[in-house]
Each structure stands twice: as C-alpha cells, then as structure tokens.
Image 1 (spheres, rainbow, N blue to C red):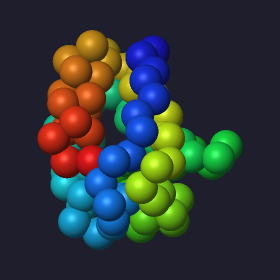
Image 2: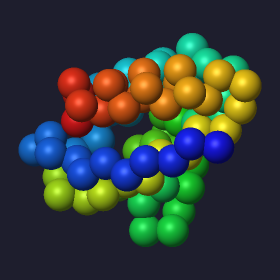
Image 3: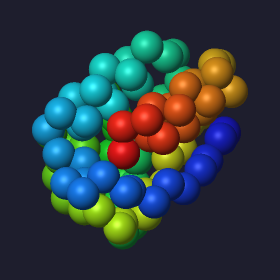
Length: 85
C-alpha cells in the first residue's frame, strides 16, 4: 500500500473538471485508489464521491493506492496532482 498527502493549491480546489480527470486517471490502474479529507475516504473511480469531499484550496488530502500496480499508479497520481491541483 502506498500513501501520500497533497496540499491543494488550485484556487478553485477540486471542482468538476479536475475531479473528472482524476476519476479518469484512477480508472487506468488495477489498484484501488482512494482520496481522503477530514476522515472521509472515497474511491477516485466515482466523480460524485470525489465532489462530495468539498476539497478547497489550502486543504490537504491523503491519497491511498493499494493493489498490484500501486507503484506505477502512485507515481502517475502524484504527477496528476502536481500538474492539475
């Protein structure tokens, strides 16, 4: 299992566009990828679940990746966050 934290710097936080892109990115991997904020954790495969977290600029989220391709998935998701959020 791989885990990392990320501070959201996008002025709008995780809104519909990046949430959709995150969901699409997460579906590329066999591993289960989840995002958590304030103790609530959801799968990145579900757009509305990501939106339900209400992630704003300045919030820190925790990403957890667990599965057969977790190393590759972790690197890709970190890169996604750095480029988009």
